[in-house]
Length: 171
Image (cartoon, rainbow, N blue to C red; front, side, top):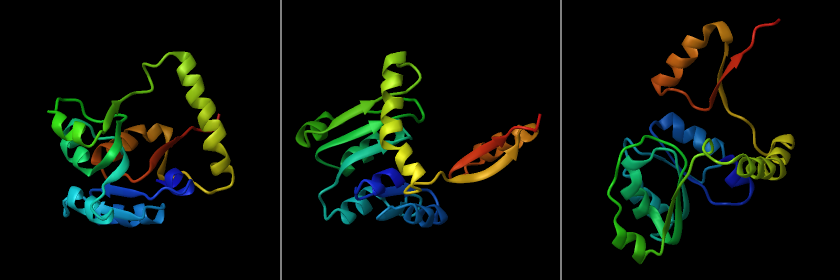
């Protein structure tokens, strides 16, 4: 969200809590939708005047495929970068009439040369924004390494907004 906002994109985010919508707006979202209380397809289309969005970064996966496609504008792109596996039916008619595209990708299985190019892009595009504090890491909690089990429990609770950072003991 912060990166997209920093480069001038209009940002719409979805979250499962009202607290998450507040945080999303603080991080630069122009619209933040609580998908547990609001139909995010309807809300997204309302926020875009019925046009839909140009790009979606999906971290959930199959469960949201159809709804994400319905949020896309013509020539829009859906990129899935992780999420739960499983299968979903792809509405080819909807995809074709919108001239949309769907990409699914992970970083781990990529060849080293591709990973190096991605890292170069991050160095070129993201690091300067971090250095200028145009974007800032969102840290939910810092936990000492010996309490790593607490960190795992916190992550599994679904109550995390941002990152959980394990702190190495002084050596």
